[in-house]
Image (cartoon, rainbow, N blue to C red):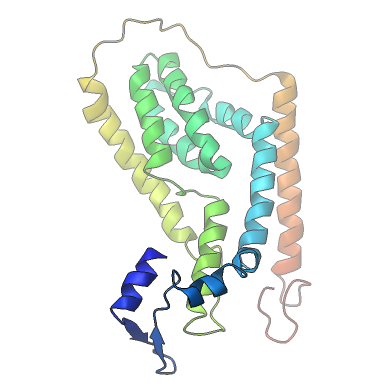
Length: 256
């Protein structure tokens, strides 16, 4: 709002490339600006395009984290890791943990340290690798996460300024994010193994610490969750992949 006041004071404007219309910056701190913004606060929030999808994904991810599904899956992925490839696995799990959003910063650092202790390596190196994977590679994932939905909605709203028919899909950025997982995993593991861990003092603590083993109930829960996910993906594929599928536009053939 302060920026709009400054820009309007300098009479800044920009030309719309689609119709040539000159768009001037409106001062939101002025009387006219406040008269517009205050009555439209709720409408502006509720009409935000990706809000519905974000709320649904956050509820789902929160439920999965609350019941222990995500944490159990991360521990399952971490079990049986070879000492040589511990850095790679910690970073890969850290990227996967983005599905739990900000909770990843709470789950991953201690898990990374535990993984390194379990394979006889310095726990601080594992903790730092996990933090680096969560923070520096935020939203890099092989899966579609909440940030992808949020950014696609924002990009679509911005693109409609130029062309009302433009649509940015949630998977448009997937190739870059998926490739980033591979690149960042390799780069992060090399930095951890060659530069970070060698500079740490010798670890004199207990090397007998083991990763928490999943209970039979947790293993069964992961199995049933995986089977349910496969069934759900199969149903969606049947509704989308065929040319005359139910979730395709009958006229254009595009996915709804």
